[in-house]
Amino acid sequence: MERHRRMTARTLPALRRMMRRLAQPRHPDADAPSGPHADDRAVSARLDALETQVRHMEAALEGLQDAMHRRSLLDDERNDELQRRTHPAQMARDLSDDARKRGL
Image (cartoon, rainbow, N blue to C red; front, side, top):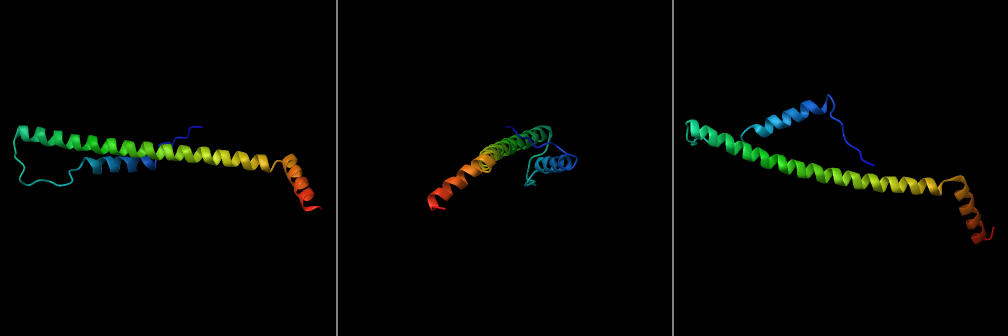
């Protein structure tokens, strides 16, 4: 059973803010060389940093999705077991067995 979180009107602006924040340089370098090639190198370095951060975020998100999926499977199994155990016929058998064991 696969569950995915939908993008909503509330989550989309938050994602945009996060991406804008990631696109900003963390440590502006005052001693950086200037000129057209320096700009290309700076943009390239920023893009490389962003790609690294996005890969890290994707890996973290995949880990979270896997954990949520595993938890969902465990919850489903637990719920199925509880439904089985609380089915009227099963409860009657279990109560009867318990009464026999206690000698009632």
